[in-house]
Image (cartoon, rainbow, N blue to C red):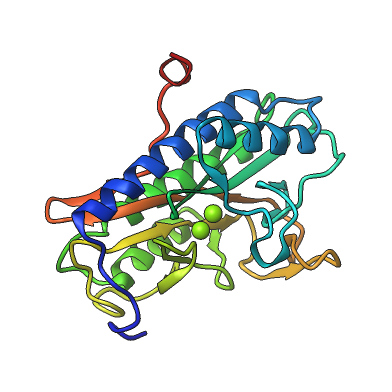
Length: 260
Ligand code: MG
Ligand code: MG
């Protein structure tokens, strides 16, 4: 990985990404509150698209490399990039929601996993560990550190908990494009990769498997599943590095505040 190839964002650009991130955080809070057993996955996608357009943003995923919807929904052994369809969410399903949008051409990319209905203890643990892995990854995104510090923070925590991190899909720089350099893997060695500086904006997105790290892609050419068929969990935030440290641009507000 080289230090060249990405541009640090100016404060006025980060301000625009903050605005995009706020809408996406609110959208995901709404989707999380909406997700329940009995709902069709396509209905979640429609909720996402309506919310995004109502807030004067553009759904980013529709048409991105041919993706047909506004939202990726990945259930149980599906890791990421699940295409919304007629499938009905069942009690106990581990549901991962990944969404992206643009506002005035600036991207935000974020997602979360949750259990629809009543979680079994194994799912609850996977959710807890993955969210904590993201928190640790974000905390490592500090000026003077390295991209490898982020991956190391995620990987070392996840593996100490007995789970594994996906290698084939990684976080990324983000700005006028959803995917910019540098890549932000969920594994790595401290002190390696790009130097982290104020103005770096990245999407950090640990994908954590209950079993082995290997994945494969289904015949729809999109849906990524675990090779061993065990469950997978995912959380993602768009994060701006400032002189003071990492700032999450896609924080999810309490739903009550969203609907004010
Ligand atoms: Mg995403
Ligand atoms: Mg992403």
